[in-house]
Image 1 (cartoon, rainbow, N blue to C red):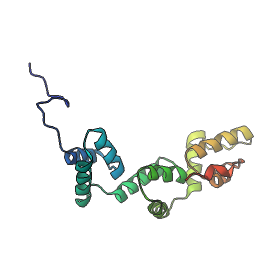
Image 2 (cartoon, one colour):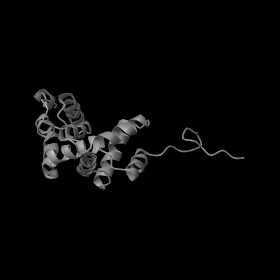
Image 3 (cartoon, rainbow, N blue to C red):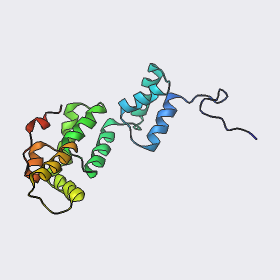
Image 4 (cartoon, rainbow, N blue to C red):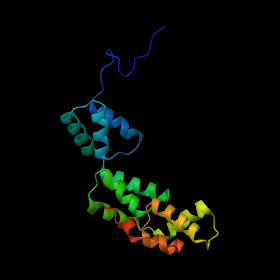
Length: 166
């Protein structure tokens, strides 16, 4: 019985950084920074990685703007707030100015989104219990909604310091 060659088999030639990155992009969009990290973890060296990423960019297989738009739409659909989205986009290496543009272009009603998340999590009934209002407010803050939005939706006292995420 023959064994199938594994990824560490010396008889199997190592794929190029370009081929590896193209395979990753075939599954889903990736940011340039994310691909660079994955290629380095896969043992690909600096210049080969940079050349592969430049080639993928030139061929429009990898595009940080397209990646950001897809990620933003996905996370908004999952019910995350603007602060969480900014932090996530920043972690993928996008510039602050581009993040602001994308957030403005998204034209999301954050109050409605926060209210929808509360309905999904806690049902449609409101509460007059201050402890329960605070619990609901903390839920929205963890999802990345601004303190002002949380205050409007839950009527809870929320500290503005929660908005100081850069």
